[in-house]
Amino acid sequence: MNEARGVRMFRRGFAVQCRVIGALTIREIYTRFGRQSLGFAWIVAEPLVFAIPVLLMWRAIRGSHEHGVSVMPFLWSGYLPLLLFRHLGGRVLMFISANAGLLYHRRVTIFDIFVGRALLEIGGNIAALIVSFALLYAIGAVDVPRNLPMFYVGYFFMIWWAVAAALIVGGLSERSDWVAQIWMPYSYMYMVFSGFFYLADWLPPALRYVALCQPYTQAYEMIRAGVFGGVIRTYGDPGYAAFILAALTLFGLWLMREGRKYVVVE
Amino acid sequence: MIRVSGLCKEYRAEGKTHRVLSNVSLTVNRGEKVAVLGRNGAGKSTLMRLIGGVEVPTSGQIEREMSISWPLGLQGGFQGSLTGNDNMRFIARIYNKPFDYIRAYVDDFAELGRYLSEPLKTYSMGMRARFAFALSLAIDFDCYLVDEVIAAGDQRFQRRSHEELFERRADRSMILASHISDIVKAYCSRALVLHRGRGKVFDDLQLAIDIYNEL
Image (cartoon, rainbow over all chains, first blue to last red; front, side, top):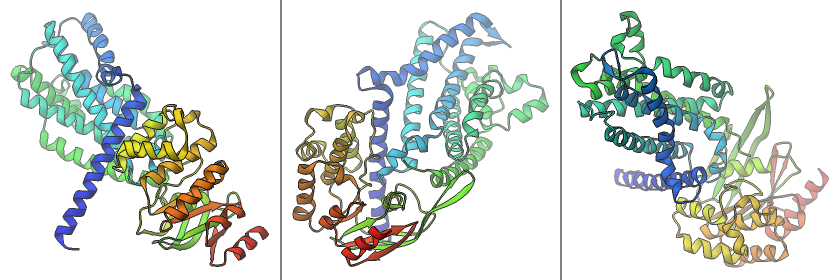
């Protein structure tokens, strides 16, 4: 096969894939939110319904400052990434078997189904991030992140982590029911050890070292560095985070491909 | 052409490996209509799913040199909670066909009328079969994988399906899984007989039916 033909075939394959992913995303919106016009708004509203009451409640319980950091921006920048991870992970549990019917159409691959879902969750989360920021900014609870580029980098790593984790959870859940059982306690515990509650700087050095091995804690450190700027000391290392996330992503993609063999379609 | 060679499929259940298809080979040329005969549980539907690419074989090869429909059966391929129209929209997007054309074709062929705006789960078996078959005809594949579905439609639908597949689309191929010999005789020229996961192709259709009746 000559090169030009290869490129042409790749382009055609890519076009088919984009169309399939688009169709899956629209279908996902219909099946999840119904066909009413409010349906689409729910994608944004869903994370907000979770986030706003929790944020306000925490503010009431814990006061306005902690360790010299204002609580509201700290929680805001912690809770939305947490939601992304939990929602994306929750939506991919057993997602291959649950969508086995779609595999009747050979053009639809599990990868397409995954991407369709991930795009919807990520899009909804980013929209919720913006809307919640606007609301909290309007009442003076949060300020514009001091180092915006760093905030974006951190959030990018957080999205990457959520995607890599979802690939692994989705692939493993096809092999064993245990994964779905473990997911619930794990996703709760995640709140405690992820970095949602703490800055690495507040930990004793030994514990800090362990915490910073975790890619999501790395991402949290970068997000916090973005939100608070030089006021706090952070330990995010983009090089390390990229390395470990790339490895996890490859592992997840492999699991996902293997997971296909375990699927029995009705 | 579709070339299936040395196809095996195993499932694991209760810690044991269960072999459903064992070394099955079959070639389907353009325009050929091939029957797959076998009793319940002989592996007919599994073979269709493997050829359609719904599941992946444990070992063996499937070469596909024509476009193949999804397996048209009594279930699968659609979302029950979505309406007929929404299912058509999804399929039209996937296969890049204009929705208006698809809708008009299905409306005419399946004669489902207002049911197209009802969720698919409210359809009867016969309606579902008509919907699936009409939709696959609208997409226009080179080869149709038909799993007993024609038998589910009423007389008028069977007559129209026959017209559509043999008069207007005589150049299309079909693999028809069935255990009703009359339907097989009406549609096919060759047959693969499946028994306990093993398969043999007969060029003499009557011989295949006789052997199947002896099983």
